Image (tube, rainbow, N blue to C red):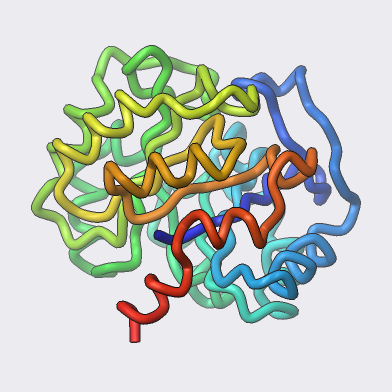
Length: 246
């Protein structure tokens, strides 16, 4: 199972929010490149990046920081936040981002997202952020009447790289993920599912691996030193993943 450490960017800094609340922000570093490089040195292979400013404004804002991370590390990077058109997808891919996450626009313009997934196969990730099972959009500021599983099933046959499922209620709370909702998502969507929200222990990661999901995103637990990168990788059976990949 893949471990995706998370860097959320706001004003060029590395921050974390509690339950997606922009008023409940903790700054963990002024230099996201240093943080990314540290995780790479500790064995990470992947990196999940969210442009929080971009998610609210509807277009990328922290491109300079994203570019610096990609340029100065060998991590496989996926980026989301403010991806609303093809020009943004191309911009991120040109920077060297491996996977581009689309959330809001997939819900609001499914035909466009379907066309983009066909044009960029195995490159786009459907980002589903859910509050009490319903899809949240626009940087988690709005909640739709569409269920997370309904949105995922709508794109079941598209050549997506993955679905990222984030349970907003658990995000940043360090109290464990919503295993039931994640399991339901994996039952509905037969492709790779990446779990996000509340993951804070080796036990959480092992339980997610048993569902099984393709990977999980770990953020606050790493910053708060509740979980080390080595522990996360060991719990995910990293050696087995590498063996299968090769």
